[in-house]
Length: 150
Image (cartoon, rainbow, N blue to C red; front, top):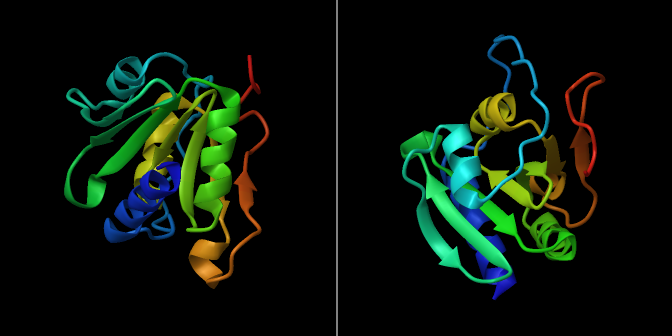
C-alpha cells in the first residue's frame, strides 16, 4: 500500500509542474524545523483546510493548494516509517521537504516556499531528472535552521 501512496504523491508532484527554482528570487530565511500533527503542520504552512486522503495509524496524508501550487503533506508515526517511505519514493524521483516524521512533496517552487514556513531539509531524487533509479540529492545550507532530529 505504501508504494501506491508514494507513486501517487510523486505523480502529483510531476503533474503540478516540477521545475527548478531559477527565477532570481532570493531564498527565504529558513526557520527551525517544525513539528506537530498533520493539521498543525498544514496550518503553519498556510493550508487552512488540508484534504486528508489517508488517515491510518502509521501514515496520514493530505492534499493542500490547487493547480500548480498543489502539494502533499504526509506525517508518520515512526522514523522508520518515514525512512521506508523515502526509500520507496527514491525510485520515482521528485523533490521533498523533510522534517522529523513529516514530508511535503510538490513542485520545486512550492517546496522552497514551504521550507520558509516549516524549515526542514530539501531532498531531491536524481532519478526524477535522469530516469535512473537510485542516488539522491540533499540540499542544506549552513545556518539553514535545520537542527537535526530532536
